[in-house]
Amino acid sequence: MMPVVFRCSSCGYELYRWDGPRKDDYYGLPSAEEVANMFRKCPKCGRTLSKKPLQIKVM
Image 1: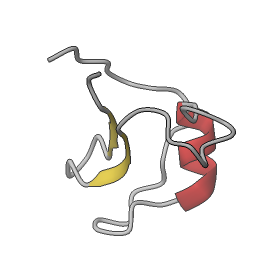
Image 2: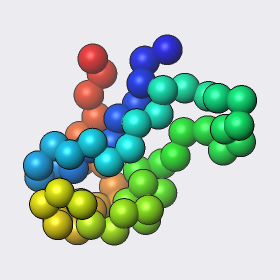
Image 3: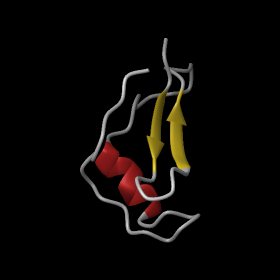
Image 4: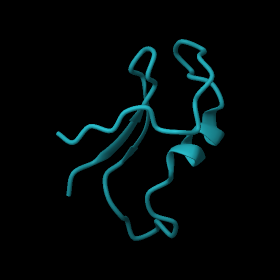
């Protein structure tokens, strides 16, 4: 399974990585809005995070 990574669109800081379901993972993959609500601002550059994904890449 490929990981899902949420990054800051300004500096590329990795905000959250989901490597797939775990035994204790009751909720699964968080949405972009949930990740933005966790942080509000990028811890590295301070940019306010958007609740809508700006770019989706499949690698």
